[in-house]
Length: 133
Image (cartoon, rainbow, N blue to C red; front, side, top):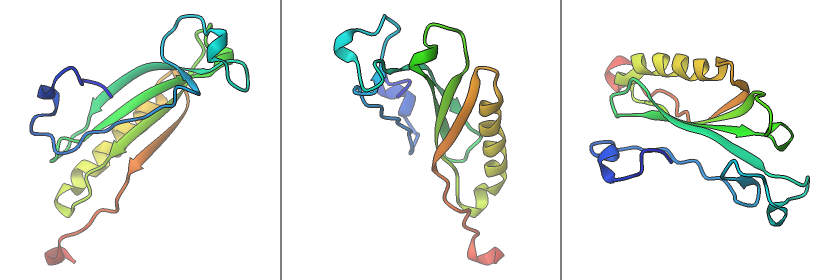
C-alpha cells in the first residue's frame, strides 16, 4: 500500500487498492537474502518499486503498481515483472474515463523496466443507465 503515512491521502476517496504479498515468497528489502529466509528455489522474489498511479475518474480511482524482481536477476538491472491492481469505474456515466484508464494501464506495461506484466482487480462491465438502453 502506498501513501499510508496518514489518513489525508484517503480523504474523500471511496476506494483504495491494496496488494498483499507473502513474506514466505518475497523479501522486502534489498539487503542480501539470508539463509533463514530461503524457500524452495533457494531465494525469494524481491519487491521493487511500488507506486500509485492516479487515474482519470469520477470516484478517485487509482492503480497500484508493484514491480517483482525474480531471485535470479536481483543483482542485475534486468527488467521486472509488474503487477498492477485496479478498480475501474464501471457506471454508465463514467464510460469516457474507462477508455482513458485502460490506456494508462497499458502504458504501465510498456515501460522499459517492465519485462512482463499483469493487470488484475475489479474490471466490472460498464453498466449503462436504463434511460440509454
